[in-house]
Structures are given as C-alpha cells and as structure tokens.
Length: 318
Ligand code: RIB
Ligand code: CA
Image (tube, rainbow, N blue to C red; front, side, top):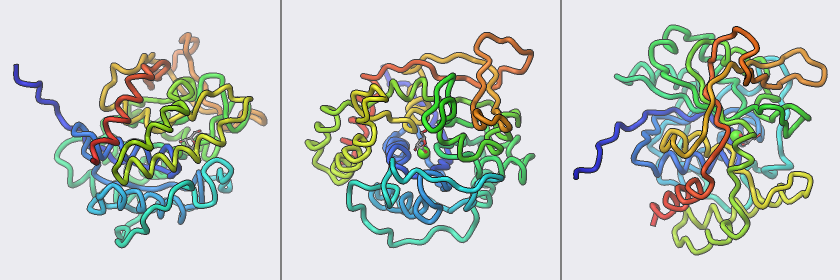
C-alpha cells in the first residue's frame, strides 16, 4: 500500500559542537522526517566562538548554509565557563579539516533567533538541546508566553540516573550550567531526556568507525576522521567502552524513530547547591515524591538499529 505519510517534525537545534553534536546535526539534516529550522550554539565543549564556528563549518559541510544560525550566551548563567578541550580537541571539532564557512551568522542573539523562528512557524516546534542549557533557560525566562505557545517539547542530552562523566554523579552538560538546567526542568514544557544511562549504550564500535572509510562522500569521510579522533579519548579502560558513546545523536534518533528506545516517565530535577553533587540530575524513578512526571527518560536503545540509521544517513550524501 501507499507508504504512510509522516508529518515532518520542525526542530531548532541548540548545540555545542563537539563531535557528537555534529553527528546529531547530520542526522537532523539527512532525515526527511526532520525540518531543521535553525541552529543556535552554546559554550560548553569549547569556547563560544569555537562552537559557533564549528556549527557553521558543519552546515557548510552538509550543504545547508541556508539554515539560519546564531551564537548564544558566552557564559553559563551563574558559574564561570568550563570547557572540555581534552575530549573534543583545541578546535572543539578536531580530527578532520572541515571547510571554513563563507557565510555569516544571522545578526541576532540565539534567543532572538529562536523567537523569530517560533513566531514565523504556524505549528509548534521541538527544541533540541545537546549542550549546556544556558540558551534554553534564557529563552524561557525572556519569552515565557511564546515558549508555552510554540514549543511542544524540549528533547535534550544531559544528566544521568546515578552516573556522572565529569564529577562522580554529574554529567558535563548539566555540570556546566546547573541553574539553567533547573529552570528548564521546572518550566512545565514536556521534556525528553537522553541521560548517560542510554548514551553509554549508544556506542559506535571501533570496527564500525573503520567502516566509515568506505563511505565515499565528503560527509562520510569527515565523520571517519572526526569519530576516529573522538574515540581515542574514550579508550581509557576506566570507561569500559568498546568504542565511542554517541550522546547527542540519541535526541534526533528518538525524534525519527522513538521505538528504537525504551523510556520511562518520571520527575527529573537538578541539584544546584550540593558540595559534591552540584549539577546532578535527580531522577524520581520509584516515584518517591509527589512531583510531576515532567520527563520521558530514555533508558535503553536498540544499538544496531541506531548505527544502521547513522550509516543510512551518511550514505544519503552520496
Ligand atoms: O556529557 C556528554 C555531553 O557533553 C555531550 O553533549 C557532549 O557533546 C558534551 O557536550
Ligand atoms: Ca554536546
């Protein structure tokens, strides 16, 4: 019969590229189910100028210089900025010589660009956040009514149930800006969370990275170099990985094919004052509080299907 007509999902991607942010952007651009309205960038994996330049280099690589892009806040809301050069390299996207962008960002701040796109969209938009939540929080604070009217959900990579990758129980994105995360989690817009619990399962294995070498188009070749670089940081035996965890692409994969994931609804909030736990996402898995179940949390993934989706997306640039 006629293939089911699917509704394309309009999204805005707020990111801090970052190797896995770059892969999330590629998935969004490649998927016929996703319409990427705009890109905004946050400071996290690297300094704000570098993450903006990286996002622009990625749009150039993907042939989508038409997508409007704007840089966001240069610092977290309260904390000083801490970056992750040891993970993503000096540029924030080391491992492959990406084309320098020959276009300009729009002359708007990130939250002004988000407001513009939401006002122009006739239907609600999904906000995808794959870095610190600074821009998302500022948007909710400055444009609360527009947010309630035109953001249908916020899908984000960040946090964890019990784990951490930057402090013992704190994941990097939330670590960088805990106060922003608390604003987002308590605003009331439905949330979908990709915590370390699922992203550590979403590994691309070393042989699968090697196989990217056979994808003879500029995007496949770029990700062969980028993911080869990204994988090296994760070889430290303390992680117990067989490859590299693809954190941020879990957000886009969920939007494209939610059945790829096992999820649970629960309340998620953020600790902002703990000496050891500032930035910890506190997940009420056993519903021990009467707090609203504000978040659908991804806890399991069909890794094979996830990798197939990524390979199909990379081949779509042939
Ligand atoms: O902890 C993983 C997260 O931090 C990912 O979003 C990665 O890109 C970094 O921003
Ligand atoms: Ca990121």
